[in-house]
Length: 233
Image 1: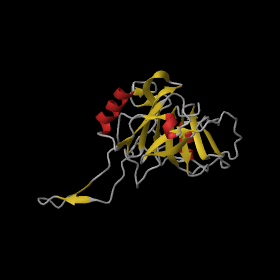
Image 2: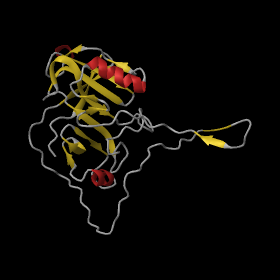
Image 3: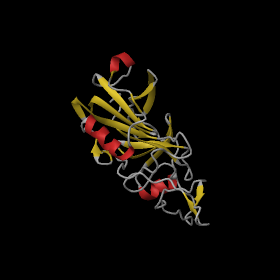
Image 4: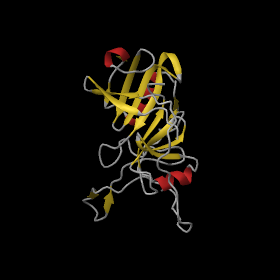
């Protein structure tokens, strides 16, 4: 796998700004997932991501209990081209409005920050990070997606800060998401690269869409996704 960037966190005025380290060098794969058993069958990823939480309520007029569930968020598919209906390079205000229409107001927003003043080694002169729980969108005025306009440059999803990711259930268009195993990932994306290198256990579905794992065994699980173009390009 040749991941040329990885998200790191820069703390600025109590907010996190996503930056990326450059790494044009080729990486040697230090751990390759293989299967030594020809008789093992791995089940396909689940078709639903709604867990059964511990809360339940009983109507005063009935003895039937109903169990609450966490709804899966739709309209924000994770891809190498963007997030849901918004593509990398799209104008920032429209992207933020689109995500707000699905998730509501963001939990934090850094506003536009000067790259030099925050010490971010990024192209262009300014960047902004808007957060909805475990989903972080990064905007810039320069990236491989666009130059000279404030636009959508990257996103990260996870790792979950609580028991479940918030927003819950974001997946690729093929249904792979946080919590899925390496085995499930490779069933859906046979060409995906899985490595354990200087960045830790990682996977790459295609250029512009990668993430992190608990480990690279077939039972290792996906902890986060990263899409788009960060700093150090």
